[in-house]
Image (cartoon, rainbow, N blue to C red; front, side):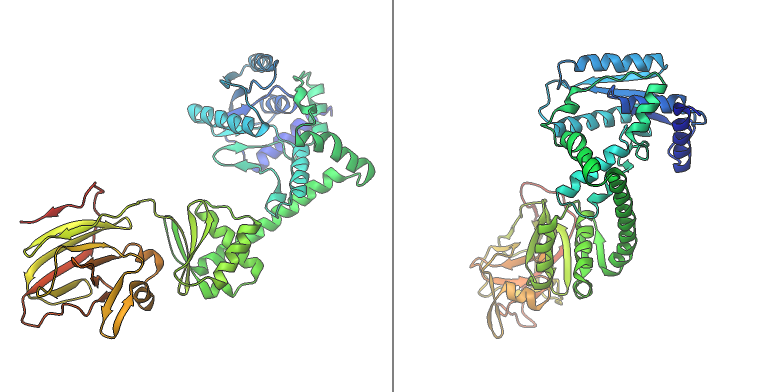
Amino acid sequence: MNAPMGLANDFTGHVLGRGFFSEGDRILVGVSGGMDSLALLHLLRFSPGMPATELVVAHLDHRMRPESDADAIWVRGWATAWGLECRLGQVETGLSSEEEARSVRYAFFERERKALRARWVLTGHHADDQAETILFRIVRGTGLHGLEGIPEKRAPGILRPLLPFTRDRLSEYADGAGIRPRVDTSNEDPRFARNIIRNEILPRLESAVAPGARRSLLRLGRIARREETAWKSILEDLVRDLVIEEEDGRIEIKRQEFLGHDEAVRARLLRTLAARLGATLGEAGTRSALAFTSAGVSGHEHPIAGTVRLVRSFDRLIFCHRSDLGGDQTFDIEGLGDGRGSFLVGGRGWSVTWSLGQGRVSPWVERFSVSGLEFPVTLRAWRPGDRMRRPYGSKKLKKIFGEKRVDLEERSRAPVVVDGRERVLWIPGVARSSLLLPGVEDHALMLSVSPVEIRRTDEAVADVP
């Protein structure tokens, strides 16, 4: 069996075995004009037994080399010769780095994939690319996840079907199929780290240290993937047992149960939970977050990454985002009478109704003697230094919140009622001051406060009949 047919059969078997494609799928193939991507395109187009798919070629001119426009013409020529549609793109200005070029290239691929409603974007990464990536990550001090190397699939639609096949096999296949690739001179440029690894370090390793270095690196990647798969299956059960409540942007877990795990497991759990909120924890970040989970004081918080923070609230650990609702809207009751209004505290909407009369009190309904009451009566967020008169003396609101086991997140959204002298009269649902206590038969200012969904406006709104 000649070389092209040998690889073509192996490639078809791999594609069918992995179930990558179905009949009629539209597939976008990223083609640079080099040997790897042209070999991939030929395998997809001509390998016997492949599912009948609709192939579309995509090429982006990065304008990083004087001859890059010729690459586009070359790719379009091959696509036309093989009866395929070709989508060409070009950056408006030259790019300055490989990382920037990669980002722009994948953005172009994704735009074209969406426009064509294609299932996948295929790239020509192969086994040698995988070995080089793993070695590069080793010398940078990667963790187990990094040792997995290049993923076979990546959201939203990247697929790399050549990862099991070496550069030598692909080159032999291209020669046998009469494929003449473009030569990218930047692949020899020692300014790029990948070229030093590919052209100097790996060859030297195989000639002087370990003849099978590439195979060993690929084996290491397979081991790492198996280990990561095992960790993920275990972590799913552990996280499920720890989580008390999970909703958009907020996860609460049991602190004592969390601390009962081995430190390595706790580190994994922290990274997993942080990732659910879109945050990535490195080694230093994981170490500091671990210290906070065991030594952090209730009511305090620890930054994770970006807007994500870790909060200790008594026997709970809370992963959440800083509220981006922003701003508070106070509300003033200017005098006696009946009325209703709305306001915001920590982004949560509240409504208040008031009247002069008698009635039963509850955690959310209170009465205040009008004798000695100074207007306006204001509903607002609590402030550092706020104090409330209690039967046993004055106490800071922070202390009262702690005694009532109100967590930090709820404190930021809790309303406080103060009079014209800035005396804290009431924290609805939490505690009442010992000031302005009315007699049972006395007419008093009745306040009723409740949470409500309201539309943000520039000012709180009152409706006084």
